[in-house]
Length: 213
Ligand code: GRF
Image 1 (tube, helix red, strand yellow):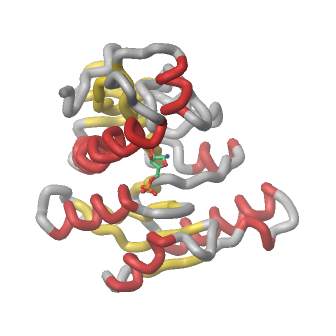
Image 2: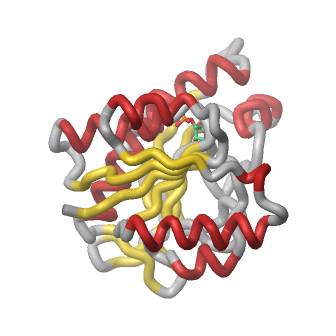
């Protein structure tokens, strides 16, 4: 069974959705461990309830980024997972660690990449007058939120939307999207080849919404 380690920093609703998908056999994988860089991340409690190995690697107790990365690299090597899955992990990792997991580290970002990398994506989409917003699952590369997209989900921006209402609607789609993208990865249908996402043996040039509304 494909082994997943999930990196979180907070609520962990995407993490929860993927654990439930494995239990319901909608995702052919096992979440073997979760790591949080924040001790109070709510997702840790869910992990413990599920009997999933949960580790806190508090970034504030490390002298610098490189030392934190080394500790995380050691932890990931010990867990011996097949995929590293970032789900609301609010920490930028250095290129060495990312390179070590190249093609086997993925992230979810709440925008239709390449639009709106970074923070406050919902506010940015509303302010820009976008009709559509959404989320992307992508392979992690050294450049922030810039790795090749595996799958996207779109949601309409509605009149009167605030960042909070839009975020809520996007999040509901994220849960399905992440399970869908992970299944593409663990089944071997999606892979990282020469800096691109290949889907069923072909370069995936145009993002295809997984759960377009
Ligand atoms: C999600 O919106 C995700 O796209 C972003 O952070 C949020 C994490 O939510 N990177 P959760 O912790 O999975 O509930």
